[in-house]
Length: 262
Ligand SMILES: [Zn+2]
Image (tube, rainbow, N blue to C red):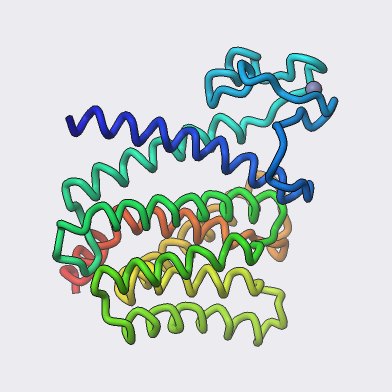
């Protein structure tokens, strides 16, 4: 039965991924979230047969049926990644792997819902900050509220949860003030707040370190292979989004390993 439900949840994740693509596109193009999906080039509404997540992209060889314009790889990739993340979060919640600070495993459904919703917002932040170098409030503030409410529901200490958020958020706020917005943006401060509120102090700091390691690795690659200037903009929200998702799965293990070494 566990396998059956994991497959169901993964398929649900793929559908959510399709919805996230639509949210990202409509937010950028400033189109309201109602009405049928259209091709971005010829504006022809997409028939449901051509709008099946993942399958339609390959069926159409990545091109619009009407005008043959290229459909971005972002679409099937985000759909697949969302499906995989949902499946893994479900398995982790079901079997109680690596929870940061929660002992009571009967609360697994709340943990799954919390992480699945937050992961959706993080995937939007990941794509949006990478493509457009901005983290919109409507994508960064709701997950903070959801993470906070879910963690309080799960019995986390309110003071410590807020302190963890303020600790990491103010780390970015400090850089924002010192650099007058050159190093980080106000969106990064909010994602920092999310990092702390969702993960707590210990795992939050782990996520912070991972995002800097990822940022440094990508920065070196970009400068080395693409002749990018060292002072060009780095979409740090993209790295924070990945590191929060990594930490959701491995934060406890990484923190234990690191503290064990010391
Ligand atoms: Zn078209």
